[in-house]
Amino acid sequence: PGAVVLQCGADSLAQDRLGCFNISLKGHSEAVKFMKSFNVPMLVTGGGGYTKSNVARCWALETAVLTDTPISDDLPNCAYYEYFSPEYKLHTLTEASYRDVIENVNTLAYVDNIKREVLQNLSHLDAAPSVQMHYVPPDAILPEYEDDEDDNPDIRLCQYAKDHMIIKEEQPFDAGGRYPSRGGARIGTG
Image (cartoon, rainbow, N blue to C red; front, top):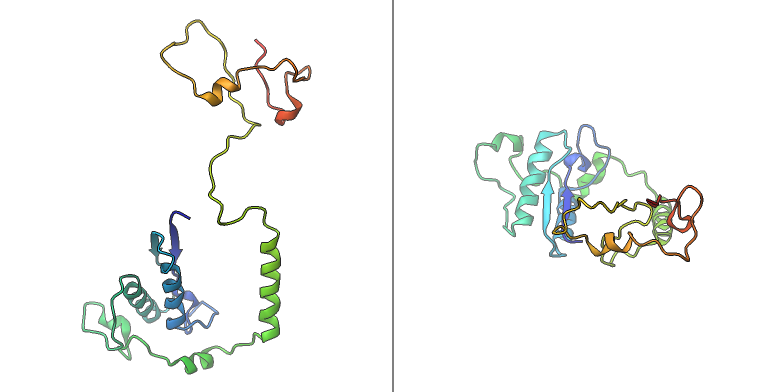
């Protein structure tokens, strides 16, 4: 893609009031680091997050990741220092303690099954993600042009419009003036 919009909602972090995921702050920021590694322009936005201290920590760390700025676990005093209470540290939980916040009831077999289903669904997609996309005018929507003597000869029609003003003798159309091969597009007969 030419650019990526990455929405970084903090509601997926452990200890969020409404979220039900158990993602660590480090894991969340690793996802941002992974997307950044593609060197594609990114617009990174905030989003959900219903525990104020989680949101402050998440966006502080991810801003540091995006700007390649090292950040200490001991946060400096600032206008928003109270949002990092009560520990006033960037990382409040160890990686091991994240597992205790919300019990992980996903078995390895369950996760493997979801992965298999997702990959199977992706295999049914027609378009290859690495193929450059471009606009192709649909045949079903053809502009109608009438030859009026009042037309301004200084206004040029694009090649697409000129090509579709031609009615080919060998191409049959029904009594309603529709070409069957054009998805029923109406052709001017006047």
